[in-house]
Image 1 (cartoon, rainbow, N blue to C red):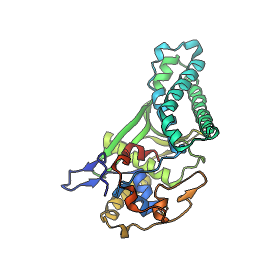
Image 2: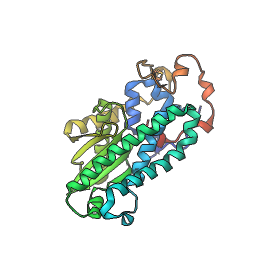
Image 3: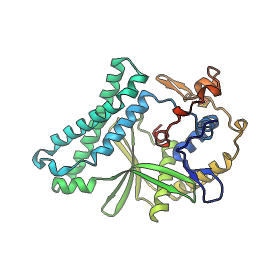
Image 4: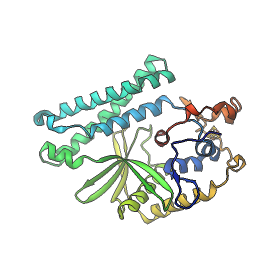
Length: 301
Ligand code: SF4
């Protein structure tokens, strides 16, 4: 059996229990067998071109907020920000290219994903420039006001859960938690709602107060959906954190049923474990510790 060396364990209770995440809980709720392969056996996950390009977009945005704005010409900042973002994306894209080419060798398909990613980043920038202008202040002041903390890692020993938050923005004494989405639909699904609820819980555990708003920025659509943090959301997050600990005590595969559905195989890809579930591969075929993936990668699935 594989052991993922990078997995985080909570030793405080005298036993080794895994810190869960919104992603692992949503996986369990969708298909227990997928949870078992992913988080009990730590089998390697199959990357897809969509997940790799999604990561490239996320990394670009993270880097965007770290640029040194003192070099930006204030009278021409819109164009300069555009160039910065494009350059950052091209660097990030070229870093991913070797992995992308392992998954896809059709140049047109790769070009399509590149263009779509640029389109999403362009949508982000249009929105960001509008926000900058709406503040009616000097460019540097407005940029710094709108600059969030990015990729913030939070964890809770009490609820045995962890998460990486794309953006935490503090503005006018209000806290906003924002997660970027590159999904094809701009819908606040139950999975996303649980993710935001868990982030709210984590934020409260770390800072002693809940964020004022939590929301999703759908980059493909250029839309944002924000909601207030309600007691029901928090109660559900706590319940889900408790349930996952109880429901995943067993290491016996018999307690992790398959739940076949549209998420097993779709137009451009398939579940990482499709081949084992449907008899094409045997479990032992995965026994290659070089393939073990980082927990950070799992987060962006
Ligand atoms: S292929 Fe389907 S049934 Fe099998 S683990 Fe994946 S989601 Fe579950």
